[in-house]
Length: 431
Image (cartoon, rainbow, N blue to C red; front, top):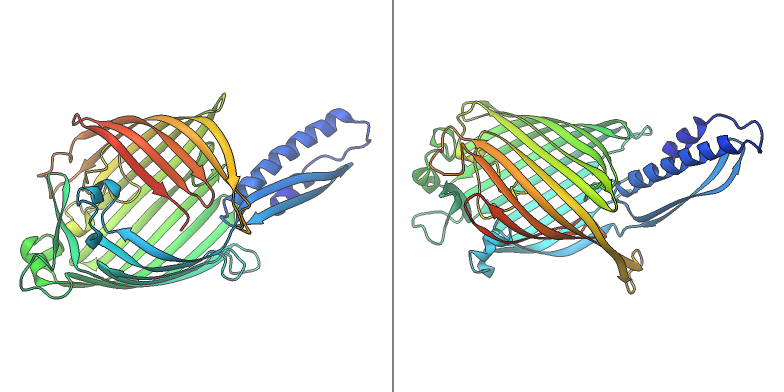
């Protein structure tokens, strides 16, 4: 609402109701302000739908009405997820249910009504994990300062101990002799501070303390898993992130720009010694006739360049991957990646949401796309894999389905420079 009022106050007074040209100019500016305000409200992730309308217009005074349909904030949902990186990696393990974590994941995305998020994970199965996170981005009256904290404990029966032939190599307690119940135990605590001086900018500072304990078999198999073959490490971690966001929809950007830069310092001695600089961006442009062009980039530098395997992850983990190389991982201490995508909006429709109180109609939008990716990863220590220290290229085409609660389903057919091709599927949602 503050954004709308500022936009209205900046307009020049209308000396007479008959000044139609000036009124038309002000109305066009108001329409643009309404669209931007709607984007800001949607991107808070608090609302499924926002309608901003002009009720009346008298001189330079405007009566604005904002109607919102709130999301459902509380999700105490069962948790069921394979431990593998993605669906393609799980398929290579024959979709084994023994490689699944299960439990309960509780999320409250508006805990006290100030867009604060509470997350509690109670996970068992292949991995044991207990996690508590709370973020309050607007803790004061100015809504510029916020805080957060987190606690984590995990115990892993299986770990990714090395990368061979561009694939993760796993070991677990069931196939190894003379091991404890878990191969790696991790615990940690974090404190966060947020500062948002403007609608589009946010600063974040995080201070964390972490403890890692590994079984002796880990350093026996891979002496470079941690520095000096260590089995127990306690280290602090300090990071700073600057974020900028001015897009139509953060979950699926068609127009606008958003990005962030980050510096992380991990450890204070040779047992854990990492200074990491990273940045990423997403931008989009409308081309007309419901065509859109998107561009994404990511870059990282880890110093010193000689890092243990624990700090080597680069491409193929999380959202940082080249489309068409999902089956592989590429480790490194420096690298960059670019993605380019042309999208065409095909069709939008909605279906009856039944008795869902916050979603009487469930919207869907379907986009066709073609894309091309490129990247490079530098690895000084682990050079035995063929995808490091060389340019990487992929291309392909696919279909995206976009729906409520930031649900994105991607069906893609990709080609890579190894002469391989195939279908790949990705799912993203808000919980």
